[in-house]
Amino acid sequence: MLDTMRLLLTDYEVRNPKLTLTPASIDTETGEMKGNYILWREGNRAIEGKEAHHRDGHFNANIRPDRNTDGTGPKSFCIVNYEVPKFAGGNNFMPVDYQGTKDAFQQAERMLKDVGIHTNIRTAQVSRLDTFRNAIVSEPFSNFRSVLLAMQGSRMKQQEYGDGVLWKNGRSQVIAYDKCAQLLYKKESVIGLPSNVLRAELRSLEASKVRDVYGFKNVQELLDGYDGILDVYRQSLKKLLFKYSVPELEVFFASEMEAHVRFCQAHYGRNWHQKFLMEVGMQCLVQKSSIETVVQVFDKVADNKMQKSRLKRDLQKIRFSAAAASMVPACNRTNGELYNELQEKLLGA
Image 1 (spheres, rainbow, N blue to C red):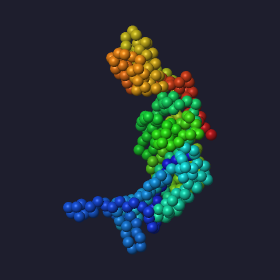
Image 2 (cartoon, rainbow, N blue to C red):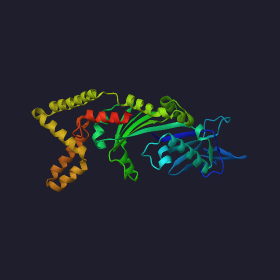
Image 3 (cartoon, rainbow, N blue to C red):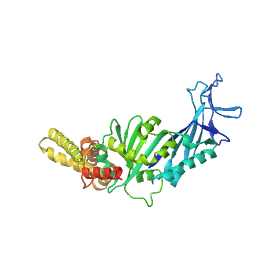
Image 4 (tube, rainbow, N blue to C red):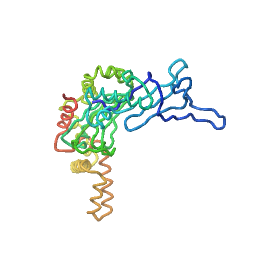
């Protein structure tokens, strides 16, 4: 359930560190040191520099200066980024239960100590929290794309990319994507995993957003309120994305289809209905494959270079046709059925 976390450590000590220290830059003309700060102290000795960090496959830790200090407060702070499931099970595919999450925090504390950062992890402030659910769906991710694109997040900007759809604003994000495709992109094994896994993540990107959404500010409060995190995830996703009933969604897609039909009627003369059917068919073809694949097939079959050029131009027009892209179902199931499946599997028990 928990994925990426960012923790802010303010109560910590650095002893016998195994860190990479980034020194301040020096103006060779004046000899002035720029960006030089006290990062920590070893006895009476101040360790200075621009920042210090540790990075490996498990977590990243960065000690950075507090540039706003007046000299009376802390000179630095430490930010730790890691993925909870990786600490518990070696990958971030399967969700982790309460005990696994607790163990992951203890492991993080031990590994920080190993590199010289000593802290009580339970006092760390949670400054980012990603929660997720995996839905094992009945269709490939591409078949859900038009439904996802119809789901407009409240006060969120939508962005489409290769294997996912992202909704975002300044402090939060929701993302739905093909989890197996992501693992393959990262060159990780998918052996033994289900073939159609759609993951939806709710990302709170700032400490204030974590408090607003989940009601806790540090690791101890997270553990105390662990049982309520899934309910918050469901409520937030429903509020942000699943705002339609199935009949309302069908009306939405029907209106999109009507808009496409009226456009063809206004622009293509008496044969507008043939043009409409042709565009719908070409859009379905592109959704099942890609422009490049279709062109490669025609390269093998067609002899006329002009036909090939016209085909590629037509396919590109169709791909960027927003009306066609939003209303054409990519499989034999209706958009309402696909929407209902997502709603049940992401928001259900």
